[in-house]
Image (cartoon, helix red, strand yellow):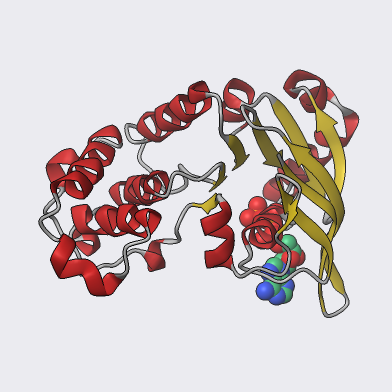
Length: 251
Ligand SMILES: Nc1ncnc2c1ncn2[C@@H]1O[C@H](COP(=O)(O)OP(=O)(O)OP(=O)(O)O)[C@@H](O)[C@H]1O
């Protein structure tokens, strides 16, 4: 069980995430929605440890992770899709995933040459690449992949770490129409496996409707709605927030 208790961060006078308390059970997919600037990405950064909380706590299975760095939280089972900049651009696609597999097995980088020919690691990495439909690109340099394929590679790297909690921040952003279903299928598969806690920040409401068991709405840093998708989508707070966006866009 992932839990945040009164999780808060201030940037100067601005409270970007404001006392958010929420619990996320294994086997559930929760969509975090809200207008631009609502605090969704900042909330993910606080959960994963990319940003230090001003106050409040992050707990996983009852253990307080608030004081831990992002890498230590990853070891505890909090998986955040790597930012593109955290892929190794000059290593191959396969090597990127294999390093994540090795990291999970606790094999240090200095052991790289010893493990280079270790079939089990390579096979595991290759199987993950096949799952994200990048099997045929295994030997390409990560930097040479088109944007959509790099995002799929991020997902493969994340899956290699076998986290308990998956944090997906707009996983299909910038992807072409034919690439989107691949990533959504992967998220669906992870959900079917049943033991993961999945959090998804997503603007596309059709995706949210289809994938989410539950929707949490953030607005100006605060949790303003939480519940079953249809009820939350129909609620006045969401209608207002999204109509707000629509009128901004139209303006
Ligand atoms: N490092 C930072 N320093 C100062 N302000 C920040 C920082 N990170 C985020 N903010 C502010 O916090 C607020 C929340 O931003 P955040 O990116 O979390 O929103 P979001 O809901 O993810 O928006 P979007 O849907 O546009 O990605 C915004 O007002 C943003 O400008």
